[in-house]
Length: 301
Image (cartoon, rainbow, N blue to C red; front, side, top):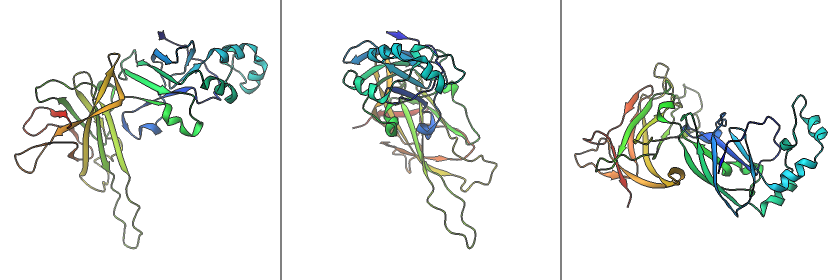
């Protein structure tokens, strides 16, 4: 069932029945603002099966159950107008109370479907989430990350890493998740100053396209022309393959891949769960496995 819900402007008081969409490309993904655009939501299955409606506000999608719609028709619109001055209110826009969410808890436990960006700025994906089991302090469990297409990934003065993922046979590895972990460095303290706290460890992620090409934007690094704490960061890179469901990747269901080293200490390059990468702020670097024209990977184990 394809659902293209229209944008509705109103205040939201419920949270447990919302799916939250965010840009997962780059660092600190869960702390980024929501995706402010309309995506096509295809609901493939609900457990148990039931009728419902959606309200699509771009970065959040609400699931409205039949008993909520019935209650909305009886609710006084004057009450909502008082808390939303200047807005045109319809009966479909009335919020759901916490008590009514509990009524839906026994009816809907899981929803599965796909998200598609018609503009292809974000990669399409399959998703599955358990609903009505959260409170406002645990909304990240209902968050759904969307990865940017390689051509829509903005590069920064901090630099980037890019490459092409292939198996030893030369076959491309599409839709894999590439992760880079590095510890930021802080300037050395001046004489008499206290030592700074340990620098944070940053995790940067991106998704390869259908041809295995990926771009990791290093937005957290300082620009090369500024006073950099260190000229080179030592980072760890790993690759995970997405499961394919309903012909689309599921970035929440991942299989670890081993990666062939870039520059081994001797000629005996090996596949490893993660490999070391030197990162220079401001540099846009192409990654190749040792004596290869691509970044080679293979299933772990």
